[in-house]
Image (tube, rainbow, N blue to C red; front, side):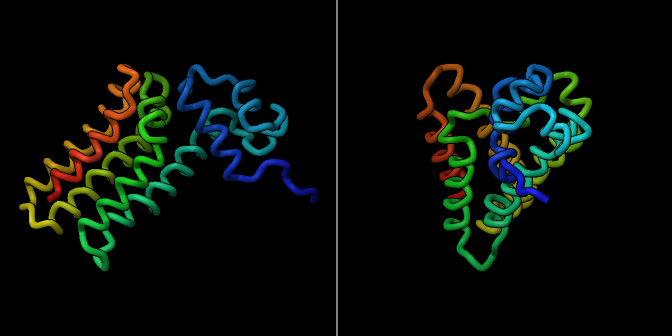
Length: 185
């Protein structure tokens, strides 16, 4: 068997770039092929289910990364809560390229995107809330306050990504992450 021309990570990053920029409906097979460096036939060979299967693979790729680099960090009780939060927020900052990239959830939150991927989007958001709730409890917030802080954290991250792009002020994302850190002090 000949080696694949494009490594999995490189493939996923190319697909993610297009899906973030154009969403599910706006991303053409040509866009996806160009971003990955593969021909359309090679993409279909790897993803016989087409664009939907590609998008599912990207969601899984992002979910795996966030599980390892955000959620696992937040709930690792072998480390002090403040260190966990600092590391997790740094990883969130990296995931969104310091506020320059939009969230794949937002990009897929169109009508057809929600129909096809709503379950994965909802599950990802629930994991954010669960992990930040756990952190809140670890910093001695009561259960209800911890849940509300976690929900507000998710809202703040998503909102900051949109507002910082809309106002073309990427520093707003960093300020939002700093505000989140203060919330858990």
